[in-house]
Amino acid sequence: MNEYFIENNYNNENYEFLNSLLDKALLKLNLKNVSFSVILENDEVIKKLNKKYRNINKTTDVLSFPLNDDLNLPIKLLGDIYISIPQMKGQAKEYETGEKRELSFLVIHGLLHLLGHDHEDEEDRKIMRKLEEELLK
Image (cartoon, rainbow, N blue to C red; front, side, top):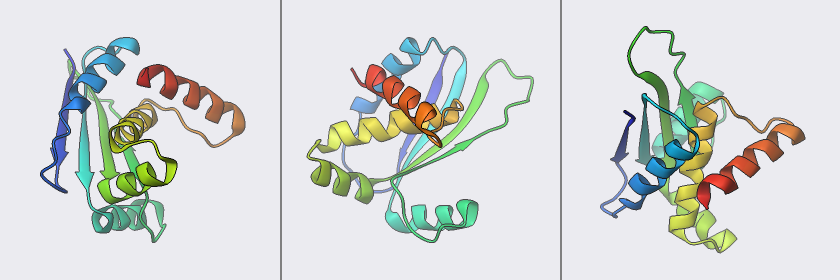
């Protein structure tokens, strides 16, 4: 059984579509017994986290904090995904993707980071982009 928690600390907008997105993504990834959180925040919180943990003094769209789950639990703790709603809204406008698509992309992007994917080099970037697109279909 998978568990995830979506915490909206930014606004009162309804992001319930994320439940369906995550259910389908976890199924496609064949993940079982995982737990993680998605936290929707403002730029100020994201900037503080980025500064503290990455030593980058600016906001960003998504931060993933994977847990090193070496605990012997019946469920694997993946970690936390923090998303800046203002950044998401700005990117949705800039890329003309719409807020639902942009937020969905950031959630999937963050989840893949929790699973160990990255985009530090071109080959890894291509693999991650392909997975993102497959999961967003």
